[in-house]
Image (cartoon, rainbow, N blue to C red; front, side):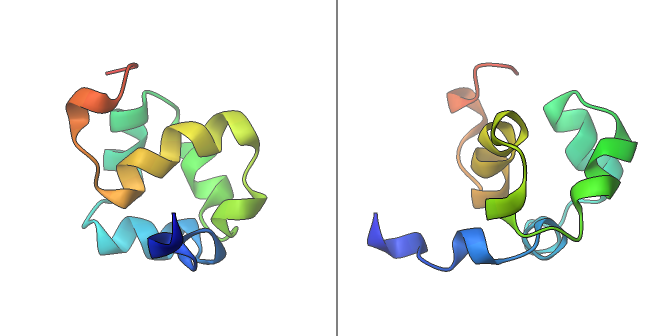
Length: 71
């Protein structure tokens, strides 16, 4: 719980780049439109709407793909 204190204070773009993903790659993994990813790219993760944040968090943390129920 205390290991990711600054995780939600980083921008989606910064977290996405840390995982080596482009906006298009991230959109394909989440099965959403690329324009939606580009819209929230400059927002901090804590400011992203809850349904999208729930999908983004495991991918941006680098969790295993088998834990993501929508894939």
